Image (cartoon, rainbow, N blue to C red; front, top):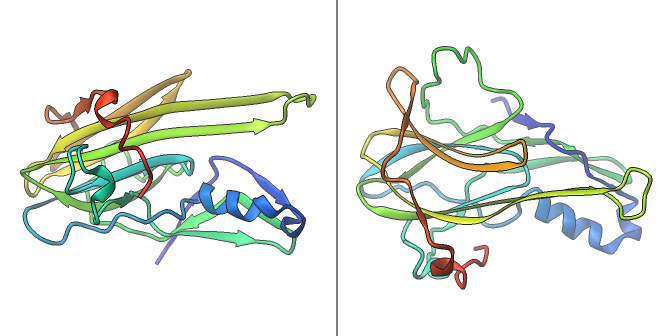
Length: 214
């Protein structure tokens, strides 16, 4: 079985034994939050989630914002990360992820998956509303250094989704020219992408007190 690999960022922790916060930061970066477990009961659809390593995409299969933090089946939509570690160096640029595919078709012009993105495929609830939360934050450099300090973030947004049973979907948080696009598409049988009418943003104030990571 092959592993997916990402080279989205390169963050280094030199001599982590001398930097107590380094291990904690590394665990947070590679997503050591509870992972989303596939929906195994009731009506189901399939969802391909494309992500960069600093994306935070969480699925709440039993919630529509109210009660988000009490959803026992919620979790981050990412497959299990595997970090390669050196003697005194943790290279976040060289992380692999366990393969997790459900045979969702690719568009005809995509002869192979985009190697610059990591993706996993999950079963999600169908014929009912459920919640998805998305955000992103990155930073590099150091204040006062010659290279300077730069950061970019996509604010936390909540969406409800109502998938059709047996259909395929694709979710991605796109970052282009300083703009964040929270994208949900249906994937047709021939792999073409179709706009999803049941993908709806939830007003931020409705979920602002519910935004803890499960």
